Image 1 (tube, rainbow, N blue to C red):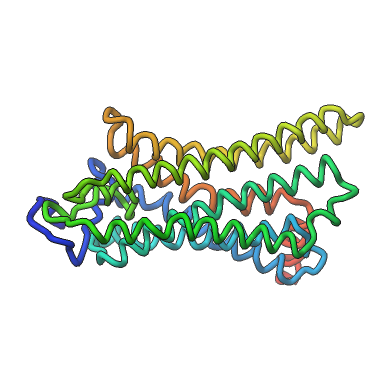
Image 2 (cartoon, one colour):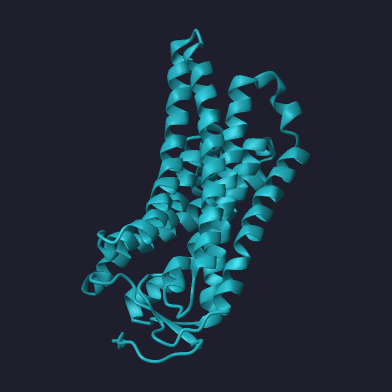
Length: 315
């Protein structure tokens, strides 16, 4: 076992990721659902990408956004799970300083990208349901590509200052990170310096992303709900509500844990650390598992393609 006692470090070459403090004896059991979700996320998202690439009828805006989301989910889950499982299975807690900053950048940058893509998919559903006759003229391939590039650049640009700011601070008290991955505030709190710049910038970025994206998604689904409820066909209303309801559930599993993690890091001292870490892992592990199921397998075209693919393999 790794000795987690603090000692003197100045810009350490490695950090020590504790895992889930207080639940070390249960790491091997906790790893089972984590590993299962990772395998499901890998298989589900790779299948989604393969189907969308090979079936030309799926070359539409909704499926382009879905493929972008699948790539983002693969990056997010692969940035965290392999290292997390090495902690749970092999007690390998060390991570190099630069690897830690790289992991932090990928996690936070592509969380921002995913948020932007969820907005894009809500916009696609809004146009498809509220203005179906103009859907193809509004969301052209060029527009879809531009939206994807904006979502990517926004996430990368906004999160780039984080690792550079963290490299400036000394870490001579401890290099032990009480987390399963290099979460920004968990690492920042180890610095022996005034971290107000990091905290204020992080707060501004979170408010900008969450405030803008949640508002856009909420407005899109409010308009969708208004349009659906005014539809004369009961079956059409129920079908659309069922689809949009499942989409909203996936969106909530991403935003609520992320918001909880953000708020507890800054404003709460009464929530157990292991609870905070488990919730923080939720928005990195659950959406990549659910997205290919909710956005993919519940979509008729993809479901039919997957069934046809498996039937062909069997025969």
